[in-house]
Image (cartoon, rainbow, N blue to C red; front, side):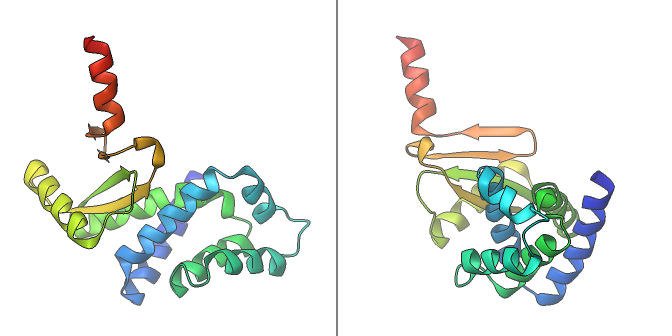
Length: 174
């Protein structure tokens, strides 16, 4: 599976680069793959070979139409049709690695209780660039369990600035 995921990711990098919306598609694919990981029933339906591929693709279209770019919709539909949708999280992880290497940037997975606006994203990217010494692409995940603040992971480094973490620290100190 690993080699196949790598081949798919390499091919998708070329497709996405040709479309010209790399950051947008990466973000959408990342979000959809994480949602798919957390939703067993959806993952089962989209990968069930007993359900016609056209029906599974229609489910993808119903879920993503108007919420994701045509490129993202096409990629997910293609993975459903080829029976590779369960591999989407691995493919997306490889895709992010390839584009980061290709553009000499790091990928920062940011968990926030609320959606970040463009100004907040830009400020966070600049702060991470100053801390890490190179450009950073953000993948923002809305996670209500964070309560407030953000949790950022770049590679193996985790920066936890969440309210939940601060509350745990206060509890520990008492």
